[in-house]
Image (cartoon, rainbow, N blue to C red; front, side, top):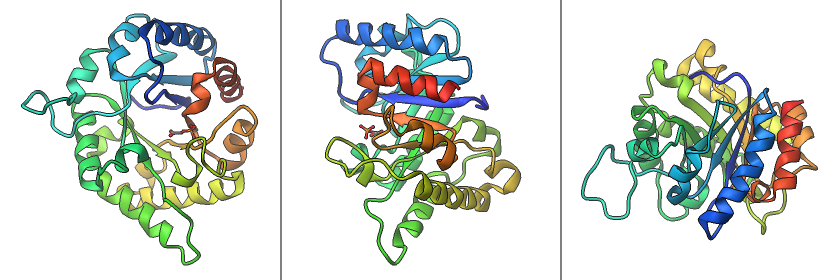
Amino acid sequence: MSVKKRIVASNWKMNPLTVKEAIALFSAAKKVAGACANVQTVICPPALYLKTLSNAVSGHRYLVGVQDIFEKQGVGAYTGSISAQMAKNAGAVWAIVGHSERRALGETNEIVHAKVLAALGAGLTAILCIGERERDHDGFYLSFIKEELENCLAGVSQKKLGQIVIAYEPIWAIGAEAAGADTPGSLFEMVIYIRKVLVGIFGSRLGLEIPIIYGGSVDAMNAKELLEKGDVRGFLVGRASLDIKTFSAILRIANS
Ligand code: PGA
């Protein structure tokens, strides 16, 4: 599936505590998402809620995604793990892979690469998260980003490129403790750089088609500028996706 619309993916992380709350949040989000024809909304709840929530999906404007998958495909003796196919069977259409909170637990580019291939193999659209821990003066962060992209996308076939979305998520901009979102100007430069690397990997015709979204402290106040001046296709939204007012505002901005 090639994605031409704006993309707003929500990452609920380890929230909420009960399925009842998850249903309430999902119901509220789907009302707004269903009215946003120009946005592909993707809601990524904890895997435990996938089945229940995906049963409540109607149409294509909003879909359900999984926050992580195991690097091995199918089934096997991997205690506690969920394969891409299992997530798909539970209703996931998209999968976040390589989120920095997973990488912080020891996930290497090699593992993320296997997860990308597993997601694509199962027919899921992969949101590949990349992002540097800090911006150093020597520009080392640029080679770090390049390495993440090259290693995690190695061997991805041209036929599957329509199932790839890149989420640029600088780690220093993620979460309540963060310094705040990237600025639209610096995001714009990063997006150009990421495009350049993607063109280096896949050539200009295909490399320029891959959507790039931004994540890290996106809220209703900064969404418009980040979209327009940052030149991203959309967002991966953490905290703000748990607040239905804010999330609705972000969706409406992306839709306009
Ligand atoms: P945040 O998280 O929006 O809460 O900063 C973003 C993310 O981790 O994807």
